[in-house]
Image (cartoon, rainbow, N blue to C red; front, side):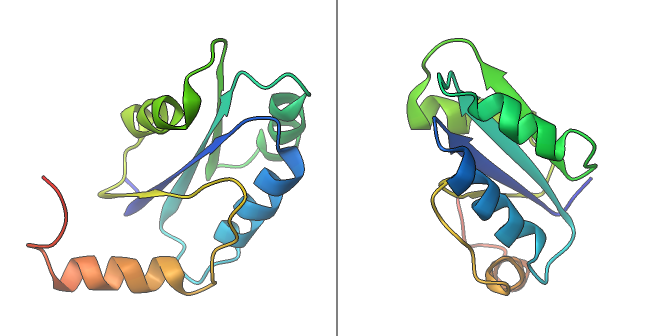
Amino acid sequence: MPKTSIIIPTKNRPKDTIECVESVLNSTFKDIEIIIVDDNSTDGTFKKIWGKYSKSTLVTVLPSTKDLGAGGSRNLGASKATGKYLLFVDCDNVVDKKMIERLVDFFDKTPDCGMA
């Protein structure tokens, strides 16, 4: 079980999504799983992302055949997550290489922080 599950919803943004995923993969914290939820893209986003990450053991790409919206996509990703912690990252974000490490360290040191 990974320590942190990172959920990335996307729709029609393959380039941004790949840049986002690469920033997560290049972070200093490695005990992760990345779950990308494609929200019924119409421009081949799923195919491009699947082609790039289908052999990765850290990345799962989930397609949606109906429009879920960002919230619904996050919920679908969270329902498949196995990590102790959940981190939601928008597909047009690039994460600082130490962001996940710092967040996990904070949550480990502050168990009463967060949501139940």
